Length: 226
Image (tube, rainbow, N blue to C red; front, side, top):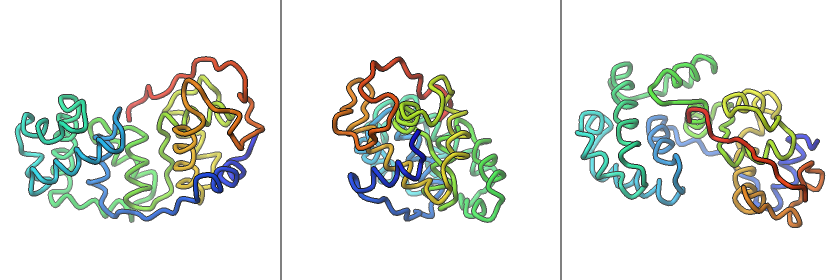
């Protein structure tokens, strides 16, 4: 089995070494992650921009009618499902931090910061990890469907592992300093070569992959709260 550092070293020349630049805006990351569920980055980005244009503040979104939020985020798809999640999340944040400033999470012990985020409605392990890593620069490893699928094919986690358990196993296996490049590189690899249905094994630099060229059994992904 290839070690995570070896995987990063093999994939970086192919896709470029990602460099983390935290946004510093945890609430924006929360909302963007909700919008990104089951849609492309392009569509979720459009929905986020539209939401920001429709409303002057997070408070305004928290207090807006659901129909108005749905209309704003329509470009991202699944607006009827995502609008209530966004509204409920922002209302929960306002109840605990009326200024919508979550910078205090950076100074909390990591487990406590993760638990605080997970206590918000609809926030699962991936969303919490996205906020910790992408917004705050803290050591957390988001595991989306691409990361999960590639990790299972590589034998890093058992194929029957639940998405929630996959977060725990991969965070323990990967060096925290590699969380960001590991996450980003496996996403790119999962989209471009190690696709769900027809992986291009002949173009893959991870030649030690135990799934290479073999019939692919079903891999359960994405069943845990995001």
